[in-house]
Length: 267
Image (cartoon, rainbow, N blue to C red; front, side):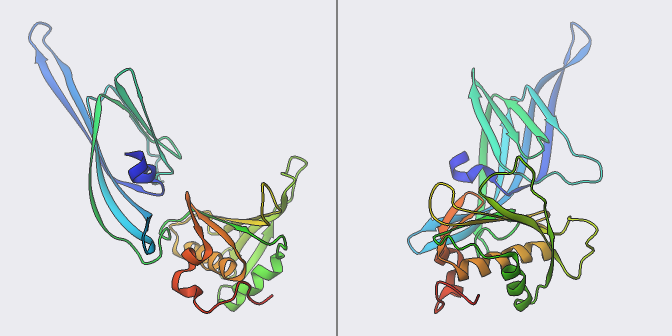
């Protein structure tokens, strides 16, 4: 199930139902629990690699957990923590255990589980909706400066301010620079709508790397900024992309946009 769903990464729990059955015990005169079933409806998207390349699929899954012996559900007041980072599952001593990151708001121990799904074609660009992180591993060791990023975002109609992060003594030695891109039209008093950019030199192999992280991937302007910058980087350098847990060549990421373009754009 985890292989098929990619652990629901980036998905959302849209509905959650807890059904408790109770029986009246005549000998004690009390009601006793006779079984608990929890049903979670999860909507998620993923990229499928087919014979013609990557294509997106949107799935709505109903995960039903029977014979629940222990569970916890937590949602902080004023915040929606239904987003799933990744689902963990294990089997031990005839029981199944599920827990959902990033905040552990749903934890279930049960006897058995079943999944039903309905699928439909996703958006034309896989792994775009709700994307939280994107990494590019370049073949070249020539890392562009922050000014290069700012200039290209200006040309793309998304002017940004840059807020650098100071490095400490414990900073990874490969890290070259890091900071937040904040849209010029936004309030810069917080980083809630920014994109964190981390640039580093060669690690295991290859050239430089750049990782983009959206602080709020479901905020439309932030999501657009992350995707536009990812496209700019992929168009300008040869290398490999990683969106979530999906690894793809830059041509797969760019799709039709890459037709007729060179490996490196304007400096």
